[in-house]
Amino acid sequence: MNISIPSPSRFFLAFIFFAACLAARAAEPGPEADGVYSCGNVGGYKGGEFVAASKYIELVKLELRGRTYQDYKEGTAIEKRGEFSPFTVDAEGHIKWTNRFTFLSHVSSVGTSTYAVQNGTPSIVINYSDNKRNPVVMNCTKEK
Image 1 (cartoon, rainbow, N blue to C red):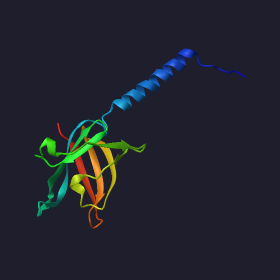
Image 2: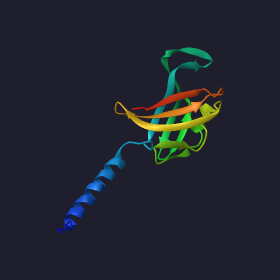
Image 3: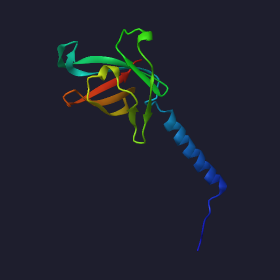
Image 4: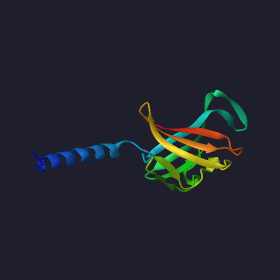
């Protein structure tokens, strides 16, 4: 029987390769990427007026700072935006918001939120149910 034991240098190279793969993955932009995201959807009501389903409606700004977030309407003074709240990301990549969004105070529940890169731009998809329990999808795209 011929048993081959890899040399220590092969183990070292495998370890370096594995560490480099992990470092590359950790360096990818993710939900913790700081910045301001423009959040909205296509069609619906804004300010009590119905907007056609072919037009994008910005509903809110979502700012991420470290592993914290805050939401606010565009033009809101910084001192009136409130506190940042922490969020977590589970093993499947779902974002768990610790507090309700102020602009979604009328909704029955916030479902899963996921991070993606679309056309090279970081984005977050937030699923929630409106006050009639209808599913709604809101897209948040990171501003430049």
